[in-house]
Image 1 (cartoon, rainbow, N blue to C red):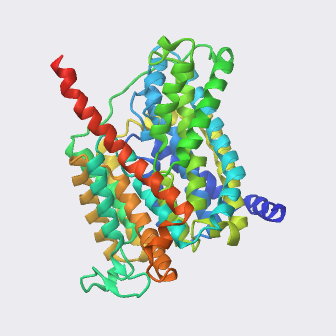
Image 2 (image 1 turned 90 degrees about the vertical axis):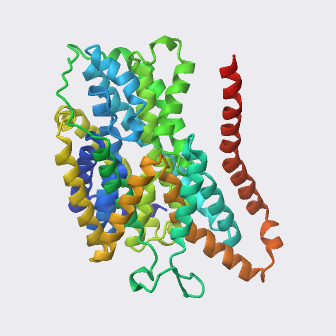
Image 3 (image 1 turned 45 degrees about the vertical axis):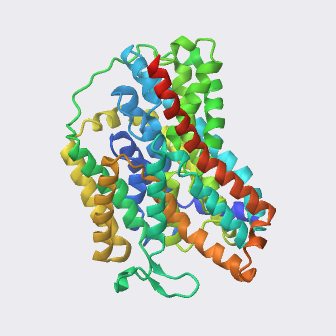
Length: 500
């Protein structure tokens, strides 16, 4: 391990890698600070542009975007009460209240400190837990991977909020799209409609660009988004950070631990982690009444959790090939473009790259904190960019990114179709996360199930008799039907409550 770590450190000292990482952090903070743009959108738009770069340089830029966007999303959340990214929703509850009380400087510095704390703890978890998890996963066969894929897919109900059935529908649509192309075992064309462009299946990156880029633009235009008005805020005369170091540190630790473990759950995401951390910090606080009114503890817990998710999500993505959140789902496509298959084999065949990613995440966290301390005010002013200019830039980037992947107009048309689908699904309040899960996990589930059946000569009983497969399937049933049962109980109790 020492030789791989030394090689990774040597790569990290190259000026080009540091340059691409810094550029990625800057772009990520731009995407995070502009409401409506997200880390997922930034990574999806720029993945095709890294195709001509070496793997380490391309990943440096993409990981910089990932690590820069989440903390920057807290800037408009604190100053404008508008979350820059979904993970910053909980930061508005106390951050904006602090800003309104003239403590904006304090709130911005807590955001920077808690984000750095969360990201570094997440990276530590990745460094310590990834190799043991991958070592265990290497002992798994096709049957176990089939069960793991089913478990990952079952989480589509849990990440759908109150729209459980709509989430299941979206996941089914993703599974259907995953069957387009050549059969994984026989190479027989399926659902290609005679189009040779579909023989390789539905390209993942153009679909992601359309869903999270163009679809968001169309939804914003339909909702009549207007430019943000000028918002003023009073800075604290003397930052009170020293007086709240202890409470902020404790809440950051709590939020980071919650964020790491929530991030390791496939498709959970930073918004869920931040909300859970904020609520748990409130429950443990001696001053619960301050939460929502400008609590430094609440802000620190929310910011730390949202950023600690990065380490947990990357651990799940790299070791098992299952995305921990939406940005890591797009990063799977980036690794595949560069010839690296996420999963346990990555830890056997690309050990130096694994350590390079760990070190890049740590360096990106430090660069993001440095830029955040200096650039919060300029980025806050960018949040008032008129919406029409903002969305036009996103559309141009979407077209460029989709075409640059394979120099194919087919991918551009696919991006437009996905954008229209994303717009319609948003209007119908259908969550997009399950669709992405189905599209990513569909090939994994199908190919491993069929390999397992070939090895067992068509005997299903030998597959389901494996202990680990049973564990995955039982967990999948609980993850799938638990939210459904909770939703039915809520619907059943609602009429009783109204009758009183």
